[in-house]
Length: 130
Image 1 (cartoon, rainbow, N blue to C red):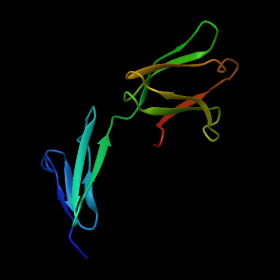
Image 2 (tube, rainbow, N blue to C red; image 1 turned 180 degrees about the horizontal axis):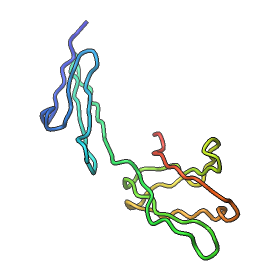
Image 3 (cartoon, rainbow, N blue to C red; image 1 turned 90 degrees about the vertical axis):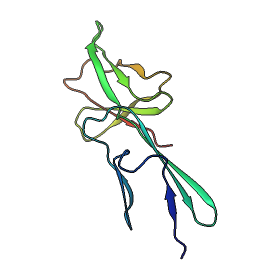
Image 4 (tube, rainbow, N blue to C red; image 1 turned 60 degrees about the horizontal axis):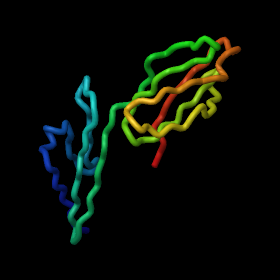
């Protein structure tokens, strides 16, 4: 078995990352971290392979409001260019797609025109898997 060595452009301490065998590289954001960070690992085992890991702030909802027609609207904030899945539920058990949105800026306005008539409605968002 050959050894695999990693070349990291910044020190692990600067990235708040550790290297342990067999656990590999473990990256943890510092408390209160905001923004994005990139960790690039280059493995060399009689050839080169590059692994890029991007860490983004989680998406979030803001500017929650009811429109005059009773529908519910909010702002989704995330990473430009990423696609997000926004879902809704009436019982927190069964989730249905509300909208799939690719951000063309860091925010998008989402409106749920079917929300009137429900006593409660819940929303969640996740980054769509590539």
